[in-house]
Image (cartoon, rainbow over all chains, first blue to last red; front, side):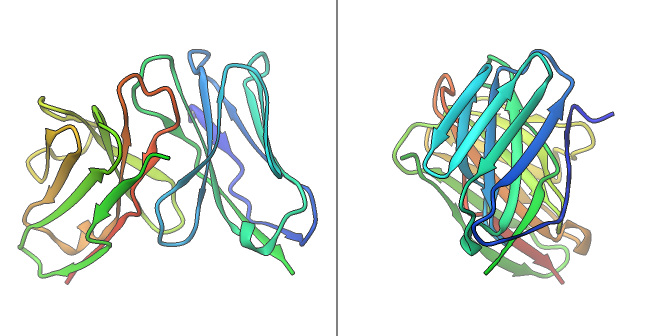
Length: 111
Length: 116
């Protein structure tokens, strides 16, 4: 079993929809939770960074972490065609070491 | 914000030759850099972790003599693919973190390597 599970999709939504992306994990030592966006043939771009449980909002993006359920989510409001990309969740422990990534969810937002 | 520059963005080389990929942190000192490999429609596979001034730590199954990593300064890490073969063709990406890693790590733009 993988430490981090992410639904690969693909996910297709109409423009303006609310998108929910999710990951589950098994390692209770994870304390930092990240969401990255990756466009084709580009390096991942950090979208959201959260420490421990709770919510964090940045514009149209909201990240939620529920450590009791070992479940994290990324919500995208008013989705745009430019949001079409692969979204990767990642997490790591307290030490500044390597992160464990999900396999990514490919999102397409149709105009 | 933190910027990581990776060069080249793409390279084509002949089988048996070596290729060097550079990863630079432009506006911060990167005590730790990570090298990943990514196949089409797959997630990132961590190859190795490099710390400035010390030997890299390779993940299981990654040949350290084939993928040479040098992290000689706080702003530069290099990955050299030695005696490249077609199966080494992939997308290579680096990421970097400042001391403490109090933020999400910053990724380079990636290098697409094609070995012919």
